[in-house]
Length: 256
Image 1 (cartoon, one colour):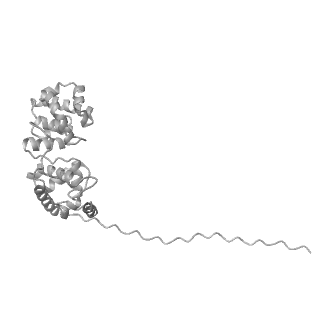
Image 2 (cartoon, rainbow, N blue to C red):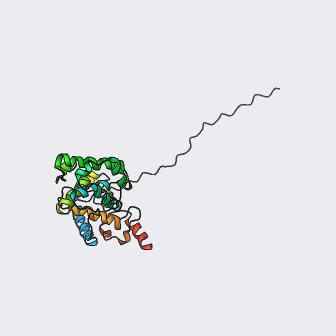
Image 3 (cartoon, rainbow, N blue to C red):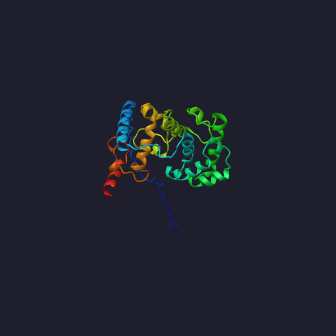
């Protein structure tokens, strides 16, 4: 007798792999916002300590009159003050007044300021600024923020430097790369935007300290709170600093 056909076993439906239970996401710790009054008090303490630590803190650019300070500050963009100071003696000997600079040939100015970088743009700013001084201010550097920022190459930072150091007028706080870094590390501000940093610093620093604040933060940034290797173990304001990495760098500093 013929054998009955073999019955195929029914294939079992594929089983989906068991999912591992997912861990519940941890709730983020909310950032503690320092009250404005407490931050202002801490800013005052920091500035008091820095004032004692750096009694020589001042504008590092070499100048003899407001015009030279204005020109040197324009040149200091994306350049060290030391390099600017190497260039300006020959520049001011050749163009001692705004009237002389206003008539300068761009190629000649470029050759003199080339070591400062971005020399073509800076040449346009120097000549344009001098022409503005001659045309609108009789060759004199104005004493107001409103007038200064209208000149080519002159933003609020440059204007604040000139007003503060040439005329003793505090109309703002000059914010450069050192001020951006140091003020954020200290927890005085929480922004990388120049305008926001200036506004926040002006809100917590007494008006009479605005000019000196820039100088102190710049000196601290150069001598202690460096960009890559801050010397936290030797920092005079370590106890009132809010930077999360300060302890790690303090250990590194002490082990050198």
